[in-house]
Length: 204
Image 1: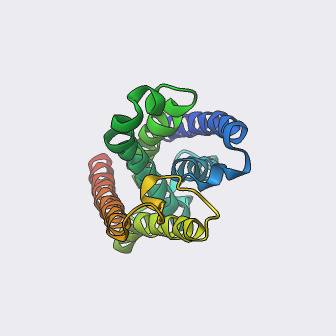
Image 2: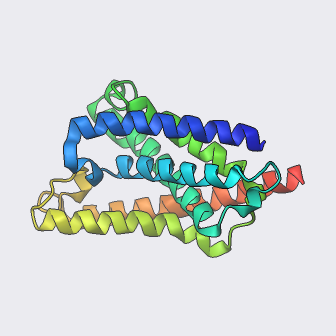
Image 3: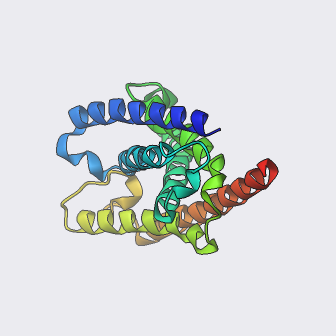
């Protein structure tokens, strides 16, 4: 299993580098205002860190430090959120092809989320995460939202998502989207941690 995980993480890093190169060309220095890009870049670094740990041997993946495991959970949840928001909210408004078929959209919105979740679920030998880890993805997402909300309020950023445009949207709309995304992160994190635990026990 470790060998398969290593290969998947290598594929993830290659895909993320391709996407990052394209996004930097398309958005320049403003690329990090996008939740999707931030989540994908973080996954690239997490995969690189996990690979360094897995190089120590087939039976020593327990060496993956706790903070890296929690960041892996953050990536899996955040990338799932990008997929769900793109599929259920943005694509119906602006077209499925744009969000899932154009340029590096297949990487950012589908392949990276899928591979991130798979590697998290099947890396249970690294250890059981503490229950409070379920809060990490929601906290990371809210931190992103708070920063962009302040930048929008100061007119230093425009969006990039409609519910962050505080000058155009009603405060209740902004608040509800923050609640929805935080709740979604909590539910996904709990589900992924539960599934990883079951898979780990089944392989034991």
